[in-house]
Length: 228
Ligand SMILES: Cc1cc2nc3c(=O)[nH]c(=O)nc-3n(C[C@H](O)[C@H](O)[C@H](O)COP(=O)(O)OP(=O)(O)OC[C@H]3O[C@@H](n4cnc5c(N)ncnc54)[C@H](O)[C@@H]3O)c2cc1C
Image 1 (cartoon, rainbow, N blue to C red):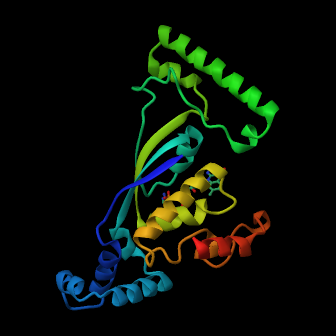
Image 2: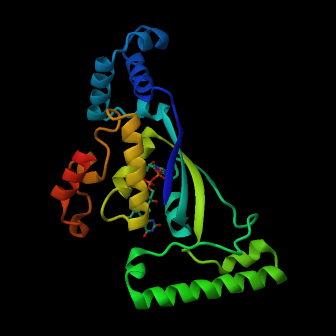
Image 3: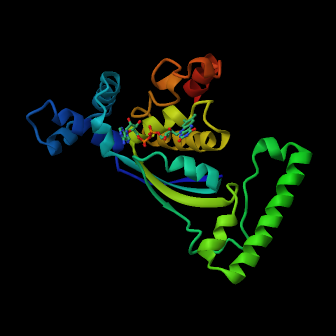
């Protein structure tokens, strides 16, 4: 999996703080931006997140390129509706030589890996044969969930909070969890104060919402995110 931060709103923490201050000040945003020291910005951001006044954090966005992931992952990803996506098309791009993602549980099991890779080869052959006799857009129906894909996505900081809450959680599947963790690390580098309270629910909300399905490793997860 390759995750690259392509772009983000310049000075995201300052923009959020200025937008939030505007709500409570007679000054215009330009004056507010000029007067914002690093300390004032941090103080404002902490207050916002604490209060749950989260609309100002929607003003900043982060755009990522993601490669080397499965169609199973991209399907889970696009369920996050408060985001924008552009994905490699199987209608227009041939999958004759498609790569595939092997889940670790299969890669580590000799018997499972043999079944899996043999099946992938059969599918590849079937796809190539179908493409000779029907349109590519219909041949693709034979392709597997494991098929490698790439996409670019953009989310604002509020949507990223929600994404991390759900997908950094141990209950999320390994592949989207790996993506969420990689994205988390990148945005944390750019905006450490803005994302200071982000993470799985047991970090961002202080309690595990999973009930009986809890991973039971809340202390370990909190420690991990404290260090990240
Ligand atoms: C562990 C796990 C297991 C899952 N299992 C399944 C499953 O078995 N089947 C399945 O279908 N999905 C499953 N999902 C997907 C899940 O139901 C969500 O679709 C996905 O996580 C996106 O979350 P979201 O809706 O909060 O995000 P977004 O779509 O980005 O929405 C963000 C927030 O905006 C608000 N919002 C967005 N749209 C609306 C709306 N139309 N009405 C009201 N409020 C809205 C909500 O507050 C929402 O939390 C699973 C997710 C996880 C993390």
